[in-house]
Image (spheres, rainbow, N blue to C red):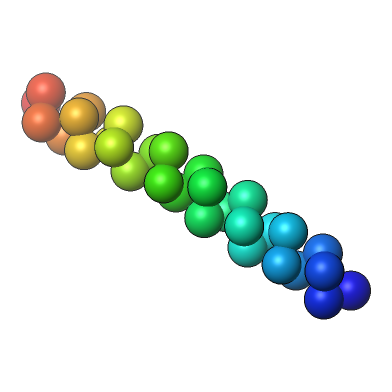
Length: 30
């Protein structure tokens, strides 16, 4: 059970790391 939570946290962290630069570039364009 705990391992699944760790996997979810790692996936969320990777998604945030990849999405933050994209959001920053989009906000800079507008």
